[in-house]
Image (cartoon, rainbow, N blue to C red):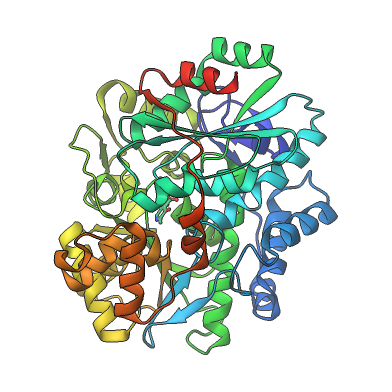
Length: 497
Ligand SMILES: *Cc1c(COP(=O)(O)O)cnc(C)c1O
């Protein structure tokens, strides 16, 4: 299987797509076709471990990786003690019809670990296969969770380095501490005075700048990406849509072949796109429900077909979804443009020049067959955290609560009560202050730091503080660099000195 660019150029192997991250024309790599998994094969997943399913999914896309290489990578990525649940992505029952897929059992307590524990292995193998001798210099823009997961994944991996740019005032206290306390000879963390979109555009601009590439080359470095624009980030995420389906069948909540809906808290559109890929491979998916916070550019897009970014950017209690330019949407646009890169290119040019584009009524109708969408602001999110905890005893993080709220609205308006999985993207303890305040009001968190909030949340809910949070308390802050949004290249070169 080869990989194309969403903007029409390129025809590369899987390992090249993983190694280079972004196509030379600024597009994203997409597979030339979707490998098909028959119902028999999907049934067989019911008897397999998470690792075995992940292997099957990866093998079907990554053709120039040997089966043994994929097996070893999967075993190394998902072994204990990195993940604190042997199921890797356990499925919990909320009621007969709604289940929660917990993707936060890795080292950084957010779903990004599932892809980023594996990606470094895929990148190293890709460098070998393509006889790349330069250091693979991973550059990451993060809205909070990718940064730490990438740092953990690439820390001390030979032949690589990892530099993270994060919005200096746009992440939670614990997210910031997680990043700035990272050890490792090859890790760098730089705060950007701006929001996530500024950081992401800055990194994308560097990738597209030949002069920057030359400067890196002169230092023996090849810039690459660990953001979900990298296909190697996306493909591990496809696996958990299959395991969730199999778990639903195994517990008798679904018959094999029956459709299952997923609601996905969405920012850069990577997670939900993985669900779309699973569907295109044959998984019986009813609807993919895209849940946004107050930065509701995507729910507007799925409602009227217009993507419009000239709007106010809000900081919310679900910061990993504070995004207006959702990179992976481009991969879906490529499909609804009948895989014609010229059309995608024209939309992306409009987006860059005018801040918006429209896909038209016919294409919107195609999208709406698969996707539904909605959003929740912070008040609705807090109310949902409280409601779910009071009704079921289940504690949700703000991102997951956005999803849960949107599911409620969707069911009310559509009458569609297909069995549904809420994709839970982070541990509530990563956002302990906001979760505590949602349950008990502002006064409960008064005078408490992030760790105090976690301890209080644990008392109030009778749930344990994850060890990943406890461990942070004693670690020294090692990274303090901050730069202006126009100064990212200088800050990076400075950090390499
Ligand atoms: C990254 C992230 C999201 C958004 O995922 P995308 O793939 O960017 O859409 C949602 N929730 C949490 C907790 C995240 O870290």
